[in-house]
Image (cartoon, rainbow, N blue to C red; front, side):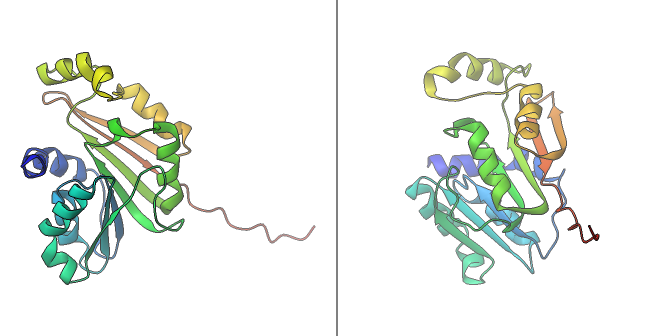
Length: 202
């Protein structure tokens, strides 16, 4: 029931956040912390010539996500794995886009984990982090969560801390977008394109 509720409750903020990133039909995408699988289903509808992968540290979430995406899995458009953001079970340079919806404030090591995502992004690939609560948001829910965050193991960032988090990990073209009325935040950054090899004579 909790995973079903997460699917329903996070749908609007997910649509809002994904609206800020370009996703093309041939892309290979990873959803970190896929939970009940609703975001994966949304992504599978777009990547008609690509593939959407999901990972979650919870085996219950993996099972729920597989049920939610059974049709897409049968079509070969979705794959769900048990895994951890700190050690992603993928080769370097695999993904065009990585999404993280309502999950990053639970990651065990924010600086290291965002660098691990950088590793699996292709040059020019994008990480998009979406959340319906962040530090300093002027909403009743955000203020309540902020009061309890440290006691329940959440690490909330404000807008500038989000920006520094991306930049310190090496991301370029960093954008932090707020929907202040609802207390939503979307952080985006790109992995730099590889520089051309120097073939000049020495």
